[in-house]
Image 1 (cartoon, rainbow, N blue to C red):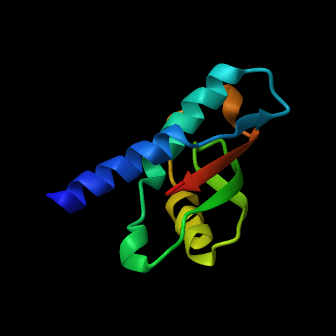
Image 2: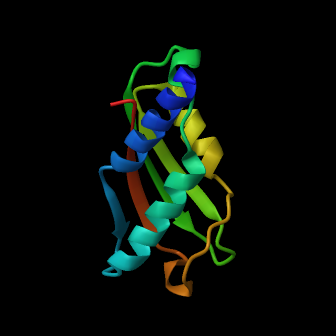
Image 3: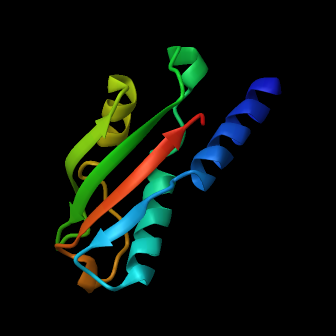
Length: 114
């Protein structure tokens, strides 16, 4: 039960700590918000304590193609495990978006365990 409480707390922390989200080259902030919400759900929360991972931030840059698939362009952060975790969770995953989001570039920064 204690583990479940910790996981719920960490997941809530992740949802609240996706600090920077921006849709590059667009003024449609509604699209950016919708994309952010779906991406956060797809990422979930890794078990940091099980993997013995220190709190860290990861920044991911991606586009969405015409088939609504996320194409990861870059993942950067100090922790290679979290970088791989984020990249693997997102790359070629499908999300529901508007036609205007196809081809747009997005950048989201995640803070894990901070």
